[in-house]
Image 1 (cartoon, rainbow, N blue to C red):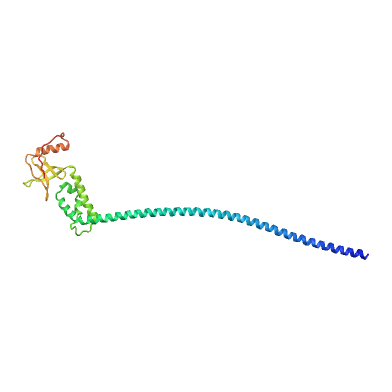
Image 2 (image 1 turned 30 degrees about the horizontal axis):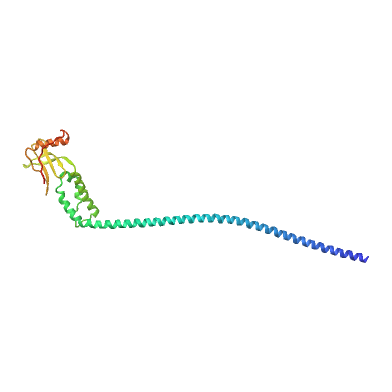
Length: 253
């Protein structure tokens, strides 16, 4: 009886021990499983985060590469522009030096040209003088002491010469007042042959002659009997008579 009782007690203790061990192993297994699940979740989240970061890094790399290419292209353009600018600067410097040398040459002779121009103006016909009076007034009274710039002084001379050249290349007809030797003033028609000479005649044809430049202005000698021929010349010029040869006096310098 005691033996059975002891056996049962021993069996119970053994079963209890096995149960406790099983409970302990089950709890341990659950803990391991929980840790494994957590680890898997952490690994999954890390992978997801890595893929997102990888995508961001890839996009950033592409953006930076594109910006780098743009900057390199811009740098090459700047280098090309700088080279072109250097070439332009060299050309402009050479032109400036050439202009400076030319200005020095002109400035050295402008006073002489202005003095000569004042003498030339006296020999120009009155219709041309009236046309270029604004330019004549701008010629400095004292070429050695003037506030006019070199460009303005050259422009005056070139303007006068240009208008004189145009007048010299054409025939100009005007109506003018002419003083007779007796002091009488008559109205005449004058036909200028450029700057070389001119013909004039009054309405009656009684007073006629030629004109030519002199040192102090134009001279107008009268030629007796030339009136009818000069009137005919004017009629041909005006178109009231057909084109024909007209014998008129001439003066050769």
